[in-house]
Image 1 (tube, rainbow, N blue to C red):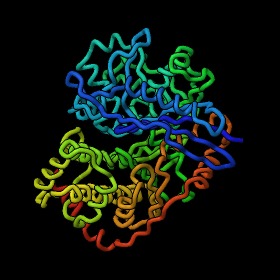
Image 2: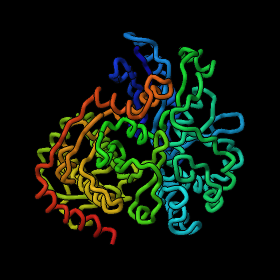
Image 3: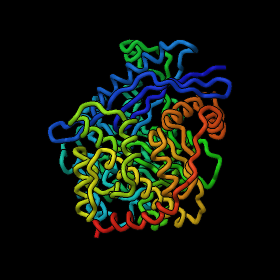
Image 4: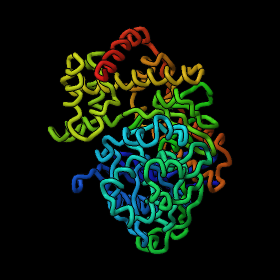
Length: 499
C-alpha cells in the first residue's frame, strides 16, 4: 500500500514543502515548493514575515495535493526553528509579527535572568542553559519593553504551532518545540514550570501558555474556511510532528551505533546524543549542553553551535556586491584556498546579527593577531575549518562528561551536501563521519506523520526505512595528525579573545 504526506520544513533562511511517499518499505521525498525566509526590520525590530510564510505554505500544499502519481496526501506536518513565537489576542488575531531570535531585544537579559533566579537554577528545572535566544529571555524583553502586550495577549504559540493554528484553528504547543523555551520542566513529560515563570517575573504569561501535546498528535482537519479559500481538501489533517526541526532530524537518523553522536548542520549546528532521561548535572550546564524533549519520550542531550548561518550570511553580503553566486563554485574556491590560515570562534557574539559577516570575520582575526582571510574562498575555508574544530571540541567535552567512547559522527542536514565539511569534520574529529540524509528534518517530519496514521508502527521501523531509502556516505579521517597539530592554535585563538 502507498501512503503520502506533505512536510513543511522551515529553516531560518528558507522553507520548503516536500511530498513524502512510502511504498514497499521505501520512502521517497520530492521537493514541491521552495521559498525564501529572510527576517525583516520593522520599526527597529528584526521580525519574521509569518503571513508571507503562511501564504507560501498554502501555495506549496496546493501543488502537493494536485501532484499525480499516487494517492492524494492525507496529512501535513510543520517543523521549524525553536524559541520564537507569535501572540494572539482573545479573538485569535495575531498581535504583531513574531520577533526573530537574532533581534537585540534580549541583550543583557542573560545576566538579569541569573540575577533573578541564581546560577544554574533554570538548568536544574528545565534542562536548558541560559542562552541569549531563549523564549524565557524574549518574554522578559516583551514584559519590560512592550508591557501593553502582557494585558492584550491571550495565547502564546511557537512558530510551527502558530502555523498549525492558522490551518486548523486549534491552539496548542507540541512538546519538542515547547522544550526549546526554558519554560518547560525537564523530562519527557514535563509541564510549564510555575517556579520558572514566578522567578523571572513572568507570572502573567503562565495562563497564556497553551496545552502541551506529544509529537505525533493529530491536531485536526483543516478549518472549513481555510480549505475552501485555499483550494485544499477538507479531509487533509494536520499532524503536530516533532515541531522543532532538530528533533525531526533525529527521528530520521539511520545509524545503528549506540556510540554515534548526531550532528545536524543547517543554519545552526546541533551536536549531541539521544538519551532516556535528562542529565541535569551542573557540569553539563557549564559546558553549554541542553536537554530537549525528543520523539517518543526520548531526550536529546545537545549543544547548539553557530552553523552555516556564517556561510549563508557571507554569501548574502557578497551577492549584494556582485549579484547571484553559485554554492558549488564558492565551495570549490574554499577547497582550493590555503589550509589553516585563520580561525574564528563560530559562537562569538560578534557573529550573531545579520550584516557584513566577512568584514566581522576579518575584524575577529585582526583582534586575535591572525592574518585575516581576504578572498571568498579563504573566508569560507576559515568558517568551515573553525566549525570542524568546534565539533571536535564539543565531542571531546561530551565524551569526557558522559564517560562514553564516541566513535562515529552522524552528520545530517544541509551540511552534508557536498564533501568539504564532511571531510573536514572527519579529519578534525579523528572519527568516521557517516553523512546523510540531507533532508533530515523533512524526512523526520513525514516519518512522524506516518507513525501518527499507523503507516509505520515504531521509531525503529521508521529509521530502518531511512536506511533502506537513502543510504549514507562514509568519510574516513585521513589527515588526523595535521589537524591535531593545528587544533592547539584554534584553541589558543578562540580563548584569547575571551580573556
